[in-house]
Length: 370
Ligand SMILES: [Zn+2]
Image (tube, rainbow, N blue to C red; front, side):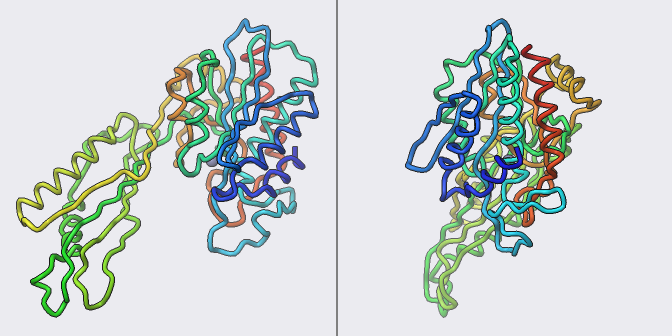
């Protein structure tokens, strides 16, 4: 398991490298137990891998969903190189060790163990390791597009790093780009132009007073909004004709993304009524829905019993889970690794957590499928 994880980290799967090499590593590992996964590959380097362990078919399948891609190492220097998979102090360091190649290594090892032991299952195990979760969820969307062969799972498990908390909710996210348009002019005569940065200032002032009307969620708290990028202006002596900001809004279950966009358009209309030269547009860069599984449903209660958890929690990050909602199955996020290490330098996973995860996944498989 440790060796599989090290190979997976060394197969850099940042978005420009793609997932194919890592998918082949997973396939080779499972092949050692006679399992033949299907690699679905496109655009030369992109890949999903789908593992289907067939059973007597008396019970609904369990679906495990991982992602193979990782985010880049970032600008800050690491104490161990990000793709070397250095082992030290009982930990493996590297990009993806926690998010979420550790989870992949653990579930792959579990599946091998179950197959090698000859356990007769009453329901199928299905594992998807998908491409592109960190960018546009292209892998899971592709899987869902061709999922008619899949019968409704008893439950969906996402082995993202939760440090073994049973997670049933995460916020959604909508990334908006707001661009104000103006008219360029020589800045010695600014009255001949329309200053897009001034228009943006008017918009941002209005945005300060904008509140989305929604009650805080018991696990997730409030929604949040943060203006994270701004660009505009070309030269010190030119009135800027364009200014763009990027806004990240983290949403709660039930919050309608379209309504947020419409609210912003209403602010534009108001500003235009006050000043006819105001012009702005909004576009959605990325949107991920929030998820919420009923913590009292049978699957979650039994899952908690198997792993010895007495409550369910929420996480701050988003996952591919919202794309799986059409399958109509309860979704639980549960895996090894500390969520606070994700996307940061010196990401690591405790080797003992890999072992622990494999034991949990085996018990989950036996509970629901044996
Ligand atoms: Zn992840």
